[in-house]
Length: 92
Image (cartoon, rainbow, N blue to C red; front, side):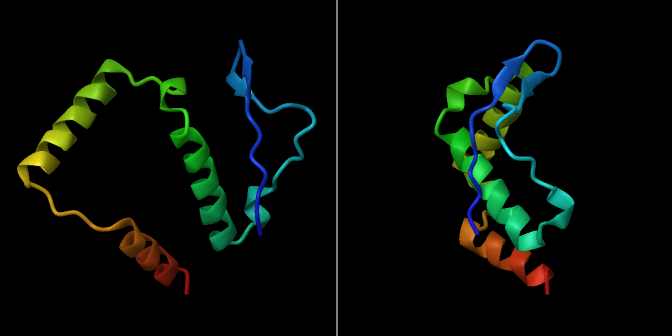
């Protein structure tokens, strides 16, 4: 199953709104696997335009702190494929 992700339109009151032509997705009816795939598609679409989501000063400071820890070897990392495998294992 593949989901079509369309760009959001700016809204003065809420920040963003879905275009009227986009069909609604009843998330509660999606399986966990479908939700994860939708989340991956959404994240990938955001990753393509990082400047569209500016960070606040506290977010930038936290990101810098975490990157410094990573650069210094102070944290253990888990490959993304392993994280996905563990998440999919929890579903069963």
